Length: 522
Image (tube, rainbow, N blue to C red):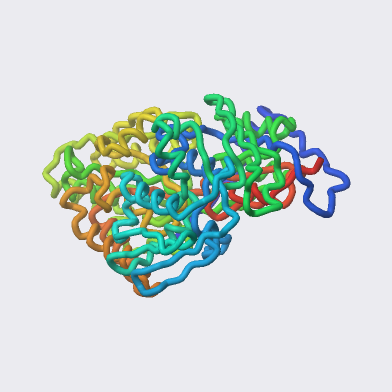
């Protein structure tokens, strides 16, 4: 796995600019911090973007912005601790009856935020809806044959084949969530995207577009004494610098930022800085069914013509790291090496591949999010454009609103190259599912047949060592056919908070799940 280096000169210059723009006031000292958590207070959290396409409907929404809000509201049967170990969630216990049968026993004290009890019917409905939804998690449930009640507290899942992904999906913070059957079926689809009813620590009470999403404590939450906070206001502040200024001024208690360079200066000012894992993959989806990219050689020329080490060094100021489909921040990741097909930069080979394609002077359109929250990525596309000129490929940049990109991605109407930044997945198969499973997002055509077969084998394989071996084959096949492009990966966001917020730390998935355990100094 190759490591990139940081450019100190550019970093120093940008930090100077940041100090001029936002001032250099440090965090206010907090005296007399209580020895025990104190309940109360509404946390003001500065975030960059609100949920867009699909809102916060967990079976429709596809964005990271949606997941990191609704994980505060909805829960799964199982959960994971920070080292990835599966733990009880809404199910107090589970049992693998045989390799294709699992039973889950629901806890007796779990209720939705309106006080109605969680039932096995809610679990059955949730997984049936999840499987039929067409969402990314549905592609990881292809082996699920049935979900049935054993008694009023026990539910049984039957799979058609053994699955190494199943328990990971059930424990997924943003994927295996349980909804109320009565509420979901009685609420119009558009309303489900703007309201919520879950069993989690918080409930949504207000949503002012592009201003604030207000969550308040769920009075019926089963895991007392959590949460300690009376609520969380996720305040939408699109610009990193403006968010940092709000933190310094005390307008907000915590923020996250995309520009990791800023975090280095604020740590010296007394703020807490979380070490978020590199799980933000800048995945570029490829439509192999039309245009120049229908040619395997053109795709291979494009991939070979990219200097990923240079991209990571220049476009992300050294914070990026070359990666394959599974981000290097995921424990299951298989890092790229010299043997990864069409991955190492080789300009001569790239030109030979383009000549062999018979496609003269190809122009490929790269569509990427134009919203302020994604501004940090623009340098990447510009450097890619310059690199591919040397190959003989014209990369036409097409900045597009994120909501429009998501709509075209989910419907499968995108063409050329389309950037959809990814998030941490409950199981490594989740990184491949959008473009290899039978979903609308899959536009690999015949080029993806072998990879799709390996993907199915990977999902079905339960033995950890065997899974790792299949994953290596799958990564190589995707790289060989250039079914997606991953220039590099970075941390999803860098979280920063004032000393007033106690007992908080980042989680490996950048979902802010530990906010239920955090508290504010009065």
